[in-house]
Length: 164
Image (cartoon, rainbow, N blue to C red; front, side, top):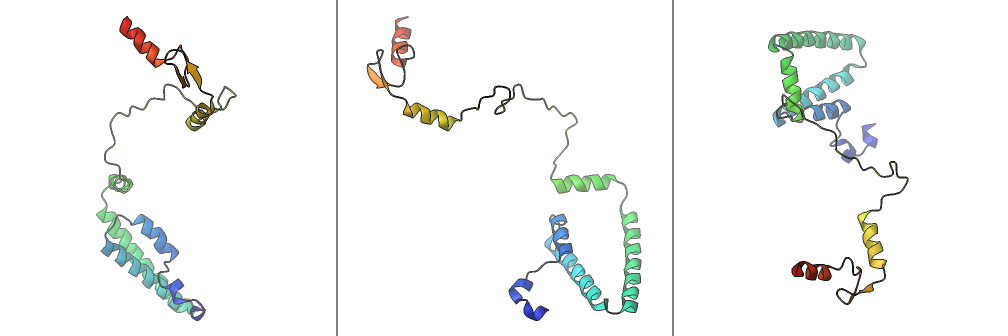
């Protein structure tokens, strides 16, 4: 089968086990990840090698069970409490510290498009386009063709505020 698959497709191929492990062990050092990768590759090699012989496969499974028991005994003696698990999870998630009191308040007002009014909210771009399309008119306050009228003319309002 390998003779039909080009080398470029096999060169950086990673087992599905390694892909899952890579995401879990992203925080570990490169040397640790290399060792984990080598361990998975060795196990996959031996499984592939022993799959034809039931006796050898049975012997391999027994050896892996004893290794698993030894690892579980080492892990239980190495781990003191479940607080270590919490600390490890917090470290992996990147949480710096959990505050004692959490003050989260709901927003004062909620503006969601279309809730209650049955009208679509016009975006800022649409407002700008509509303002550009408007015909300019002569303002009596500043005597120019602009988009405001005498009531909202800034020049007139400035003159009146100086006079007052």
